[in-house]
Image 1 (spheres, rainbow, N blue to C red):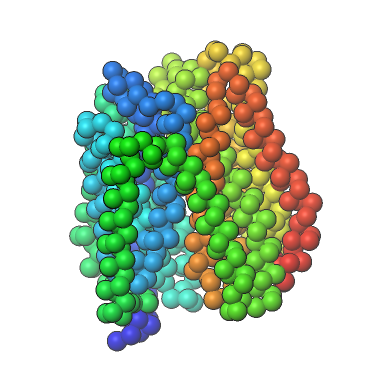
Image 2 (image 1 turned 30 degrees about the horizontal axis):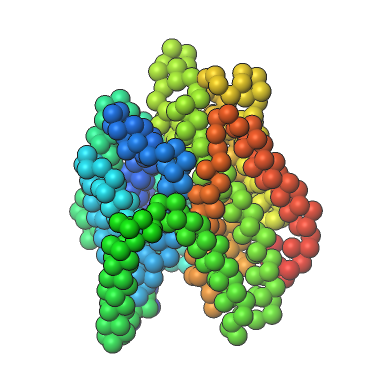
Length: 497
């Protein structure tokens, strides 16, 4: 039986068992819920764990280095998704890839829960990066596998799944963050490991009954001789990397700062290579080349947006920890709790934005103009952080309301840009490179965070007005330019709106 036949069997009988959706959505909803719980719970603590002194349970890393590590970590998580997609497509299928990814994530959190210092920290980061790359893109693919192309439940199914992602991300900082900051960082990381363990248990127990054949087939399997070459290449590559690490790290040739510079460079080179290869390919026709040119300014705009949005877990997290009054209306607040604001606002506002675009119909702004709105809101979310500094100076604690407003405003931009960007990517992608172009869209976030690794070094509470003002102002300026060129970009899209 070939891959196509297996896929059709998966989709042939519409199931109903989870809010009128296929039973498998239950499995994937809670797998992703607990994966996001573990990931965002860990991330809510990670920066504080790095820069707090050893005497207070931290690693004692310098502030600017800790910020760069956070950005590089986020960048590598998104880059690893490309490898995870390839492994599922060519080697394992999505079910097995998701399971192995979850197991690696859990192992990473367990290592992070051990009070074993910097070595354990970097081992855990490697495990979580690889594990997330295996799990995250493939869970979403499995959701799509459960629906036939004509099944009108597909969009609502993805909406329910998206709620699971954000519910896990919303709850995690309250549980993991509180335990980590009130008691012990390693207890918090251990709780994140328990979260991923629960996700794996749900997946293992329910996958056979609920998922059936979904994700068991390998869409484009390697031949036997190709597998040998791939495994050999993986083994040789791993050995070379390990050898280089053994030689360069102890001798001081490879430092943390040099590694962050390397990833920052790759964050620019990899998407540039993607664009060049697709544009020059004989499989890309004239219309598709034109659409690729139209996609470039959208990609740059997305990078600018994510560069600001992702600083919510770096610069704004540090701002919450060091510059914010952590008591409000008689309630003591943990600085990690602010990481729940982004998923909370997405859960509350996403249905409103979806309804708005449907109501506007043909009168809604073009894709390019929506991107420009996203940049405007992103820039405004940083500019608003200048106000408390002007009012109270940069050496006093400010009301948490300012952070709440900043997170709210950037989510308005995210809802203008992120789902629209996914849709635009599917429409503008060359037919021969549809999967690679979707990988390219996720690289916009990876590239943004790779560049962030250098930008966040410049943050300092004493000069935060300049920091927030320059980045926020540049984003708004780029949004205005994008809006002005929207008609020209639309022409290059060749009929795609």
